[in-house]
Image 1: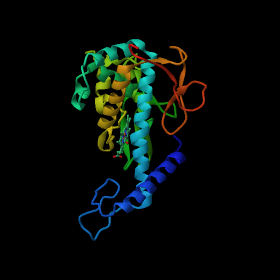
Image 2: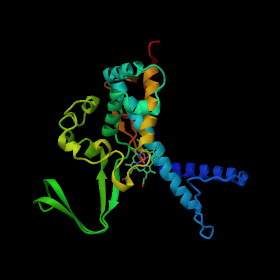
Image 3: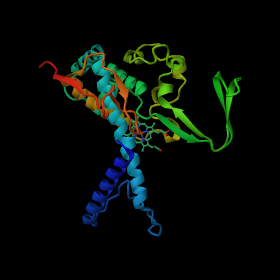
Image 4: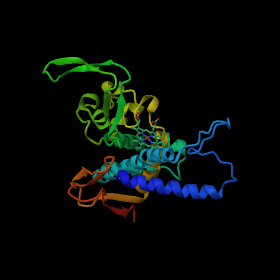
Length: 279
Ligand code: HEM
């Protein structure tokens, strides 16, 4: 979704909300967007611009990311019928609808598929940080600098913008092994599937997908539950295939976040062939 479109949607949603709020003026409600302090002297209500800024974060952070992850999940399952069928068998081995705890913990292959999607197709392409003070980043392996010399550390001056390339870290051969770029959920189940190098990464499940540290994604557990819930229903009931067969080429479309699309086609969409399972 384009930035301007997103801003328009945010503004419309904000205005709708304002209209509704005027009608509900008697209702005592505390919402994320209008938190007041107990001290009536200090007005901490947000300005229109601040509300819009927060809505942008929530729409991009909470909607686009999850939608993109789900698209990649359906796509990878369509590309890998064997994995799709194994996943379906695990889902069908359960009678009824799982609770949050069950869907989070009780289905190891399901969990492996979902985390392999988050590893291979992280929805956020990078994280940015600004160095608050001069620092030196030590490197595990030397790199060649601009002067052609090998160095074991990088000096970062105060105020430097540092970009952390999430997909490159998640798919690095040096960290995840020679099959790092393959969609292979089994790695999460095998004893040595996660290499010692990857295990050194601190992020959630050794992934950079949701960031790490004090600014880690606030909605990660919610996002994982959302993706799992949708996949559960879809894979249980439908068989997914690529529209033009298993070798259909996919590329990353434009937009703020890396949405997939069929190679050479307009728009960020991935048409699939869907049929009812067992039908
Ligand atoms: C697959 C889905 C998602 C991915 C891959 C994702 C990824 C990320 C990443 C990489 C960051 C930045 C962390 C940093 O700068 O260190 C972030 C921040 C954030 N995410 Fe998510 N996110 C997802 C879903 C969600 C959902 C569903 C919500 C809310 C319902 C959400 C809310 C947020 C918020 C509020 C922040 C800002 C945290 C802060 O600045 O303190 N995210 N997310």
